[in-house]
Length: 115
Image 1 (cartoon, rainbow, N blue to C red):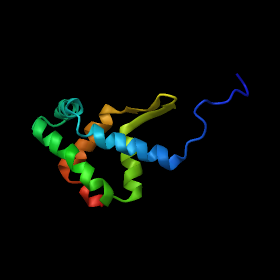
Image 2: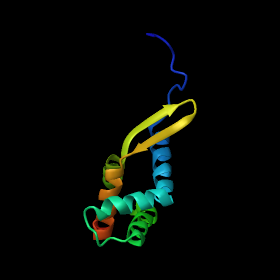
Image 3: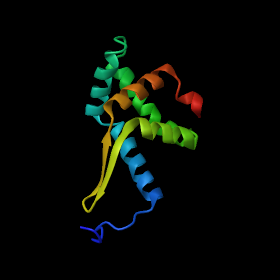
Image 4: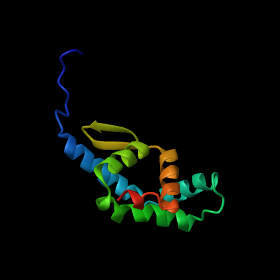
């Protein structure tokens, strides 16, 4: 379909980035994400509790505004596998292994050092 117009049109990159970050922040509070992150993190460190994983993910939301832009980019690249934009909205596909790695960094105190 060469020449067919995209029904979505152009969307400014800043709006897409903002929407992706808003979705990530909401994801950190979802019980199923907390539970999945905890289970995956336990495969690498069996001492991590579900409460530890929840606390680590919840710390990222208020800390986000304190991080440097390069750290924002690194975290988004770690967490986001793909972003699809369509007529029905924005769909963000996450990397569960990225959530696990981020959770381990948070538990180890490495994220706060980047602020």
